[in-house]
Amino acid sequence: MALLQVEQVSKTFGMGGKQPVHALSEVSLEVEEGETFGLVGESGSGKSTLVKCIVRLGFPDSGTILYDGIDVPKARGADLRRLRREVQMVFQDPHASLNPRMTVEELVGEGILVHRLEPSAAARRERVVELLSLVGLSAGDMQRHPHAFSGGQRQRIAIARALAVRPRLLVCDEPVSALDVSVQAQVINLLMDMQAKLGLTMLFIAHNLAVVGHLCQRTAVIRTGQIVEHGPTAEVFGKPQHPYTRELLDAVPIPDPKATGWLRSGPNSGDER
Ligand code: ADP
Ligand code: MG
Image 1: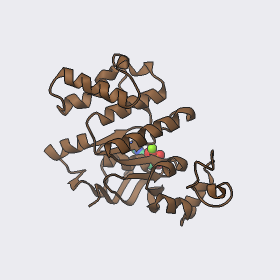
Image 2 (image 1 turned 135 degrees about the vertical axis):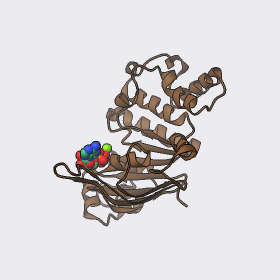
Image 3 (image 1 turned 90 degrees about the horizontal axis):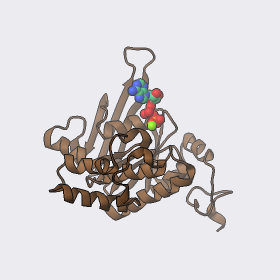
Image 4 (image 1 turned 60 degrees about the vertical axis):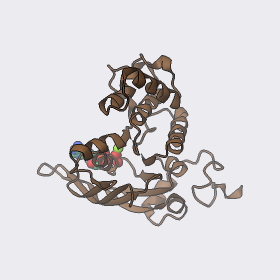
């Protein structure tokens, strides 16, 4: 059984009001334990709406979402606590997602405290230090506040915060699209490292196909709330079946053909290597 099963999920905004928006129309996908699954689509295609339903920051109108057999929208009690710990999220904008009043130690340690994962304050602090070093920050950063850091460093804090509770599924909603291009690759590499080191399952959302191609074993393409194509990333990118996928691929600048040899065949690909 897949770790995450999304079946026929639909959600409409603005019912009863003006023009309703069908943000999700019968979306289905499955994420297997241990894999990195990519979801790509342009802005407004419904990616964040789906993510919110998966991490229970929102509810679908219809359809099923199962995490390790737990019915996500209906979960209560011990199941809900397990969800809240095992499914963590990294948001697009680390500015907005980190409480500016909290120190790094409080931000990273919060989940450990809430879920009672360490027996003492000293053990918690030790774990925070370990997490900071894991993401490339240092113990000296613990008493600083988010504003003292760059966007890339802030996203590292957000990643440490998510990893603190030892999640099984990490959902990353465009985790680098708010960052300077110069630090995007570092944060992607960090996520890849963490995935490998910790055996995480990852659902990676992006509008940038190059990033997904680099990172994900399987990919689904979403357009106006509908999955138009899905499969192994190499197939989806190498032989796109849907014209929309082709359009997205054509819109991708290819910075380094050698590094992106997976992208597609034809001129500009890595075929001539
Ligand atoms: P993406 O993350 O792919 O950019 P979203 O899931 O944020 O897309 O949005 C999908 C559609 O749903 C868009 O048309 C957006 O305007 C609409 N939408 C998202 N959230 C809300 C909301 N809370 N109220 C009304 N419309 C919304
Ligand atoms: Mg979004």
